[in-house]
Structures are given as C-alpha cells and as structure tokens.
Length: 273
Ligand SMILES: Nc1ncnc2c1ncn2[C@@H]1O[C@H](COP(=O)(O)OP(=O)(O)O)[C@@H](O)[C@H]1O
Ligand SMILES: Cc1ncsc1CCOP(=O)(O)O
Ligand SMILES: [Mg+2]
Image 1 (cartoon, rainbow, N blue to C red):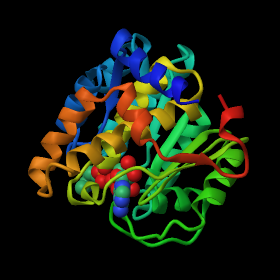
Image 2: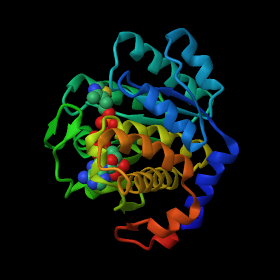
Image 3: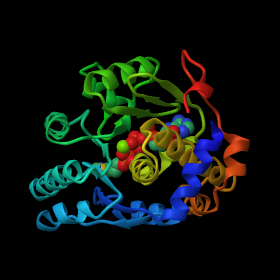
Image 4: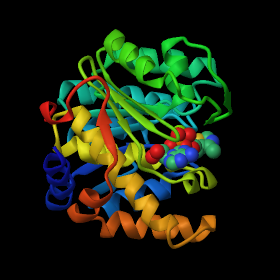
C-alpha cells in the first residue's frame, strides 16, 4: 500500500499537474510555493470571467473559502460548474465554516451544483458540516477529535464525498474506508495556513490519482512528514515554515517508508489499495 502512495508522490513530480487554486488572501503565496515545491504547477486565477475556462484546462481545482467575498463566490461557482462539465477533480477546504454559518450554506450549494471529490477541513469544520456540536475559535478547531472517525464516515456517506478531518491526528473516510494518520508536528499550529497548504497539496495528488482516499493519504503523509523533518531542525515558526517548503521539495519514497504512521480503522489497509 505504501508503494501506491509513493507512486502518487512521484507522479506529481513527473506530470507537474496544473492546479487551479482559488484560495484565501492569507495563504495565496504560501499555497503557490508549496505546490511548486511539491512538483505541481499552481495558477491562482480568481477573476469570475476567467474561472470557467481556466478550470477547464486544469488537472484539479482547489477551492478554499478562507476569505471569500461576492466576487470570489462568483468565481468559485463558475469553476465548480466547469469542473463538473470537464470532469476536473475538486478539493474543497471549508475554512471558517464552523464560525460563519453562511459558509456552511455555501459549501452545501457547491455540493448541489458540482461534483466535489474531497472535502478537507479541521475537525471543527467537518463536524459543523455534519451538524454536530463542536468547539472552534475562528478558523481554528478546539475539538479533541475523539469522535472524528465516525463523524467523517457519516458525512462521507451522507454526501457521497471523501472527507478528511485534521488535527493532532488526521482522519480520512469515504463510504467504505476509515483511515487514521498519526504523522505531523505541533509546529503546524504555530504558523497560519498549514491546513490550507495541505488542501492545495491534496488537489495536486488528486490530479494524478483517481482514488480520492489514496490521494488524501498521500497528501497527508507528504505534508506531515515534511513538517516532522522541518520541526527536527527548527523550533521557531519562521524557520520551520521555510524548512517545511524545503522538505516538501526534498521528500522521497524512502522518507515516506521510514516514517509513515497510519492504519485503517476496522479493516485491513492492505486490502484497500
Ligand atoms: N497538534 C498537532 N500535532 C501534529 N500535527 C498537527 C497538529 N495540529 C495540526 N497538525 C497538522 O497540521 C496540518 C493542519 O491541520 P489543522 O491545524 O487541523 O488545520 P487548519 O490549519 O485548517 O486548522 C495537518 O496536516 C495536521 O496533521
Ligand atoms: C487566518 C485566516 N483567516 C482567514 S483564512 C486564514 C488562514 C487559515 O488557514 P488554515 O485553515 O490553514 O489555518
Ligand atoms: Mg483550515
């Protein structure tokens, strides 16, 4: 199964997929650099009248609602419709939806008008999408995530989309599988945009891999292992962030094999892929 993960990692470098990233103003440059370091080709095209055609020529669409406004909502709708029409995979990061109710309605509308392959958020954001009580502070989750595996599985089944919930541990679920990923570093909580960057990387892996669970697992292992390596060299946020990009660039199959910590909950991972 790790061989499948390593193949996805290498395929991103080999194919350099064009990723249409409609992301927030806080992390737009971070996301572009992370995608480049990881081997993809980012394009942050945000004009409503360019969105439909640009998504059509992209290999995946990344939608991050962190700083949406009327114009960006327009852009996102046009790109979501184009992605459905042109069978372009879509990853959505519902940033802040646990604190801002209208964002839940917007994500639900995207699910209605488009084909969303993966929704990736922190535990608080994912629980609110399922309508479950949680604790957040703005865009950050304060939820302990103990019930996250079942929440992800239930949401995945109810909207027929692969769900990823992040935090100290990360959870992936589609209608069949539940996976827990135990890699990562607390240093990610000291920088802004860790989750947003993970979403961008997940769009790159999904661009080269039709299995959303495998694409999500590859992105989680890549980002979290790069973070672990960076944290071993820097305990200060600024240096950690720079080292993180370096390790996204350096990352290889041996480092993944050496450090990957994940398991399938209630099943045998080897049967999964
Ligand atoms: N306490 C932690 N320990 C280890 N990894 C963490 C921790 N908190 C977050 N991460 C990692 O940081 C990344 C972003 O997760 P999270 O902080 O939940 O997202 P967001 O930034 O959207 O709130 C994920 O890859 C996650 O595994
Ligand atoms: C601080 C902030 N405000 C709006 S979007 C954003 C970045 C959130 O990034 P992440 O979800 O990765 O923590
Ligand atoms: Mg986030």
